[in-house]
Image (cartoon, rainbow, N blue to C red; front, side):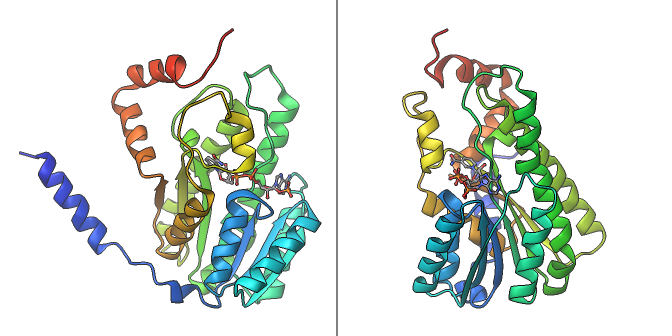
Length: 283
Ligand code: NDP
């Protein structure tokens, strides 16, 4: 019989044999982080800097990127460079990867993290916004990944994709955003199979995050939900470790995995809680 104790023992054994994180492995690592002017991306840039990595960061606001790179250098980055780019453009995703490849001489980590701003509101049929968001949050990711793959293949590198619990379970108020994240999980989960079948050197990490206390997220959900928010700096460190240890899946905070399992096991009950207890909504 399978008991709770045997499941727990198997889980602990799996954790024990899982690769350990060696901070030294990031010394001199060549990293490109997108969406790094604020939020989790900015925190990832600072962690990589403390580990002595060589970093290229990107987002749209040049002035802010400049300040982040200066801080990265003061924290210990071997190199810190920035390139301003708009991920809604068809050419900028390639331009950014080419810049990083040229300046760093190759890539060990491509960390795809940026998202375009999107309203936290009921879907009112805004197709233009949804198409635009798909370009920023999805098409640019797959374009950059494809461009960087040959270099990652050479370096036995890693592709890190920052996703969300909203890519695992549906919710109200974030339809376009959630759709882009479902698309990412579908694409990169499938790419993982193809790379494994081709015996590729490149690892993929898909990071499922719960609510994180970044300014942009908090501005949207303040007073609307009581779901607890977790620190961006800790989320950032967990993402970096998932990439460095070549884990396919990260759940942060840990209970997002439990929430996902509950949704699979008890969809009716989970939907009831989402619709009636998770948000302050009075039509
Ligand atoms: P932020 O809104 O704080 O940061 C978004 C980043 O993307 C900024 O650096 C922004 O910079 C950049 N960006 C926005 N639009 C564009 C564009 N058109 N082209 C290029 N860059 C752009 O996001 P978070 O830190 O909160 O989220 C980071 C990741 O974590 C995302 O993938 C998100 O889905 C995921 N996540 C976050 C959660 C949360 O609660 N915070 C929960 C679950 C997942 P600029 O404006 O300068 O362009």
